[in-house]
Image 1: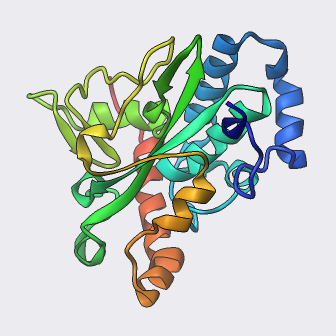
Image 2: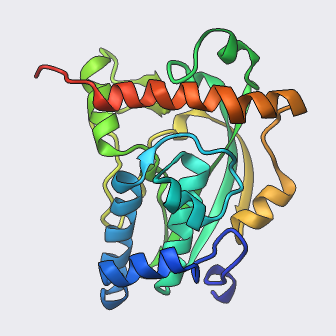
Length: 236
């Protein structure tokens, strides 16, 4: 288990921001199940769903941004759990871009790569590995999305979601697997000790110009679309 507890360049859990947060929340004093539960729900709901400048930014930068998507939230979640002695590993994939439709539209959607890099965290508790993919969307954003887009089949794809149980997706953790985008997976890269290893082998399939456009234009538009949903006042 030692390799699943190591600090790395991306899992920089000795960064002062992370150490201060753990001390403030007193997570180190909890048993392992409660550690996972509280840290998972913190990253899910206190770190809002949004698009950072890159997948391969350190956990401290995700915490400082205050928002993240599947890959960057996974980095922060792993760092926080390892910091309090809970083993974690990364599972890497690609997902179909249809999952992002709505968060990104028009010409930008057409220009985006068909397959998007995706990952989830697996955590070791009570001699079992559990999948924590449901950490991606904060509950306020997801709740408003559910109110705005009713699904008669209960399957929903778009806006960062691909699930067959849109009314009640398995996003709460209590010794179970959690999911919110797993139905969009189309390629499995396997398990990795850290995000550092994953990103050394796999990157988003963006050309140089595409990368600049995403960093400076597209992600800001996507974040605005996400914020509109999160901040919408929707009648019950």
